[in-house]
Length: 266
Image (tube, one colour):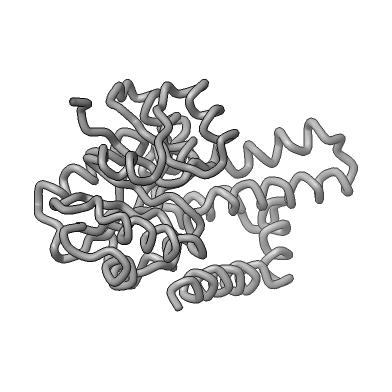
């Protein structure tokens, strides 16, 4: 009899990122992936020593079942699992689908499934991800510990109440860093820097400064004040950005992200 496995239903980008982070951390347990796209499965098998399986076989082997498909595909997938009748004993299931609340997951696939939601960052690929988790009240303590330990292999874990999940999802995305870097570098190019120095300086402004804040433990407001002294270049730059509506634009963006997540729940 084969040992139980960590099973991913869906072989997309976040599955690949999580498996990469797990293997980097030395995780050598069985990983099984189900996906209708054979090309994705071949790529994952070649790079990460995973096993591919059809849906029924994958679920039957699951010690932990991770639902890693797009939100719009969750209902059909869980209905298919329910129709298979393969889950007859308690099993720990983790949904990575943004916006889909636990009550809807439970309605599609109820007991004996114990549901957790998790939102891992793609940066988990290099072991530096951040993952938020939230639990159905029926998940036993040992199940919660297993979930935390699983995601702790690929970075810090933050437990949140479910009604804060959509806000977290809109806030923590690495897209903020990439977008800010691209925007800042493009502005620098327009001002006269060539592409290479523009990207290097923008990356330093964002990544290295934040790394220093995290390592130093210093107060963020104090660092901002120190870096933008009155009458200086940085103060003029930041002031002009604020006057142009920088804070309003960020707040508007977060509201749009939260709204999209909540729309997934309908």
